[in-house]
View 1: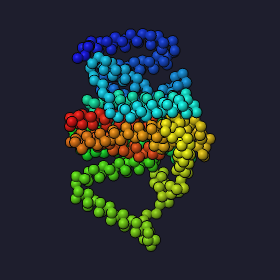
View 2: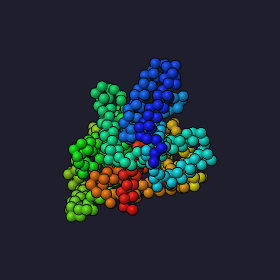
View 3: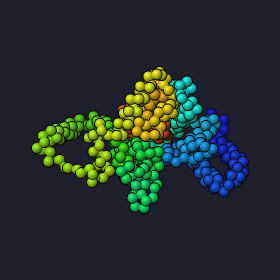
View 4: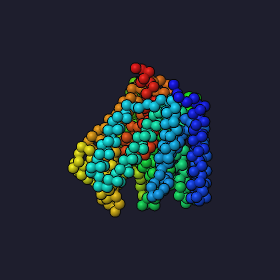
Length: 467
């Protein structure tokens, strides 16, 4: 039984906010008019969050994860929207738990994640060249795991709404990324683009960089894919189709090859799952694709028939055609060569501390890119975790992902209708992200962990009901 009634708990929240606003207002007035305006906007936002709680908690987290490019410098420290969102939402959620209005839930994946964090902490204290920097980066892992836990507990009674919000915000992020390209091409207005050495541009939108924008759009499109085919009523169907179309547009515009591959792999798994229940349709489609593949191989192998294939002049083609053409010569691609050199070197150095690794972010503290005078980073998720946390840490991390995936898959098998489509979309999104992260590591950003939290929140009630 709660020890405070809902009315009394709400009154206590408002009283505490009013009490805290007095010294905050005095401090802002002392700092200057800009801080007064910023504080007023923050107070208005906080008021809206409190009045619409708990639904607002999901909006705040998902919106913040969709704007990870923006930061606020405070005392030499970079504060991102994800951090501020976690502080606000965690405080309100903790108040709900302490007053008995909500039961806190610990997901089974927490224990291997805690082991992963412990390995990272020990390695950072023992082996990192710059211990303070590694500990600062380790706190980022604490933050994203906390976002995962908060997402699980906020979404456990409103999964459908959370998925709807994720698709809507994701569609907005993809649309903004596409808008940045138009804004530069038409008005030379830089809203979030990266300039390539050949004079072209790639959108980042509200994301950290183009590859991460591509993986973000990949997850949105895959989440919406099964829901767009199975969703009713009209409002949800409209949002899912919008997320699918805009997500695919952003994915293509990002020119991120591994995100394209991730979409192809996850899409193939989704197609296989769909075909499993329709064997005759799958047999006909497989035969057709096989015949087309045989014909294509025959044409490529017989030089006299190559005139049947369209000839593309890459020097006069657009960025998309040129990017697609690079799949044919990855062995000579400069970017691929740099990444391979980094991975080989990281694996050779990792062997000095194989069990717990070198510490969080340790590679960038010492080594530089082989072709540039800039600190390097390890672009592969598995190698990065292996270098940072060793065999024990990587094993714990992969165990957590495998456990989450297995629980989600078991729930998907037992679910029906809309719940099955949501679980399928979340599973496909996480598979696609895992593939994409083999060349662009973004496990330190919140959006990956929000998808993981939504999967656990969607799977848990179904599995509990079954047992």
